[in-house]
Amino acid sequence: MRPARLATASILHDDPPSYPSRCIERCLEMIDRAGDARADIVLLPEEPDVVGCDPEHIPQLPEPIPGGDTLALFAQRASDNNLYVAYSQREQDGESVYNTGVFLDRKGDLMGKYRKMHLAPGEEDEVLPGDLGYPVFECDFGRVGMGICMDIHYPEMWRILALKGAHLLLFPTMCIDYTGDHIESIVNARAIDNQVYLASSHFVMQPFLAGRSMGHSRIVDPYGRTLANTSHRPGLTFADVDLDAGYETWYTGEQKERYPTLKDCYLGMRRPETYHELLELQPESPAWQTAPDLAHAARDS
Image (cartoon, rainbow, N blue to C red):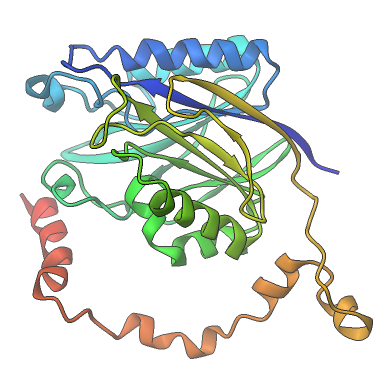
């Protein structure tokens, strides 16, 4: 067995914004609450340093990782509460800026980081696409990987994390507008396809209207079933899981021995030698074809 108590948060997003963002303090409070509940890991949303911040101050936010004040705050709370903490923040690395996922261990030490690979439209004006690949981090309860916001739409990277042995995938985001079937279906699909647990963490705004941050942070099992959901309000939710609990296949005999679980089946029956077209084909839309050039332009500016 690989038992773990997972926690994920929905953080209130202020409107009008402030400086510094009040989302930071709210995240720290959620870490304390997760610690009180003896969670093993807590997931917080994408860039709480940026979300809710007065736009004119956003260029001042990027910090080195490690070495920044924001990281130090989260690290101290991770240590105080003896739990893993995952979130993303704006990172400064020399002249380059990234949207960086941070993994802290139970002592508050930096285990590593992931830089968001797939940027949302307009985001390339502020940050560069990631350059650290798709890391998986070894926790005392299992292996964990992360994708950030726009990354959820690119199944290839989530498959890489699963092939690297991830038991749990994390999805911090600042998605707006609760569309239900859209984001929830994609999250469910990533969990099902890769036979992993998946936690998402969102912001939420008041009043709860269309076009505003959505809430509904969730923990999903490998069948795509929702185990926990914060609904449309700020808060924290938990799920006690066994990360080793694989769902059995319906086969019998030799095939059952070969593919005892759905994960063995889905990952073991891949045909990567037939996927070369993914590296060759380009979308027909001219706008999509220029997207990589925008990223290079940001890097060269």
